[in-house]
View 1: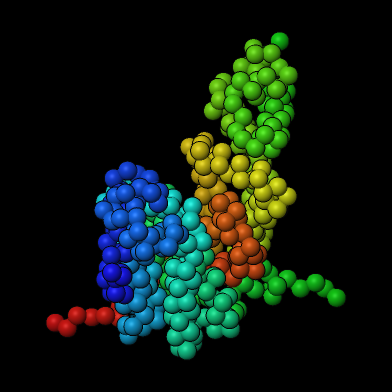
View 2: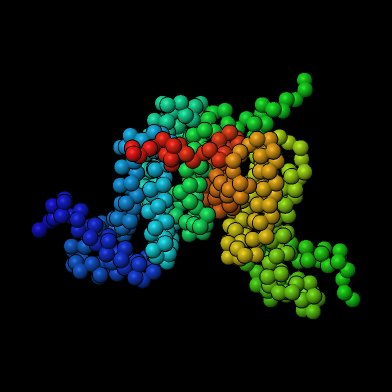
Length: 212
Length: 212
């Protein structure tokens, strides 16, 4: 009997969580056949749940990233001032990752390696985070921040300036240098300083004139 | 006959450059015995030049990073305004790395992997770059920028905000998103926005009061 959509989703989630447990236990990515064998399901049932390994990986990534997604959505729907909203947008995910790393560094590192090895499969998560950040930028621009910048320009610059707080690798390598207080300073620095004017002093286009 | 200091230095540099050529040719780190065999020197002469593999690695790193060192020192001794000075401090090294990556991505990637695998051995370079950056921060603070921040705080925040332009890995992974214009905007954003005040709006310590 085919599963209805709700039962199918719950079953995918159950298997995905089990795969995450196996990753934790074995310290490595779990191949398709092992995931199937360990699922307790028949091959037919397993293949009805997951079209292929990529589809299984998607379910696993979705399960791992569910707290991040929930955090972003909660912040997006809040009514905080733009600076605090953007801070929380980054802070909550940073805290989740930092806590996960602290609890089990080896497991966290394995998961990061899986993500790095399957970058295309986590692309949709990155795209969604970018989409949400664009909303925050548009809201901030409506209040006069980031003036004179296209949303895409602001998006790229902001992503670059906070990348240590969004890339899990940074937590692994320089985690002790990353703090919520510093993130708050970086976010405020962007709100105060980032605009279409920024860049002229540094690159000298306004300060150096060639005598004519 | 033992070499005098100048000849010894020149000979170390010659061997180090040859090792870099071998890395480029073979696409991997060069072991001690291979470096010795390929050096054209007797074992005794080679061991008089390099105490051990770490010492050889130091010479190779020094050779690879010589253009970066020269760029930093040139900027330090210049009389540019603080924003332009800091921009150039990061820009020149970024341009060197970007150009090297463009010329030979595989070679550049191998060198980065060697650096990552021998982090402790490139530590002194990172420390020196930090030392120079502290000088730039102190000069900027003398002109009123980064007010209310300890030099070490400013150092950490600035390093975090520009890390995509200093970490070679970033050039490999998101090189097409890194531009001199964006770097200029980031530097100006820091000069305009970064101070001891920054962080209060984002973290909400000033805007949210608990009713008492």
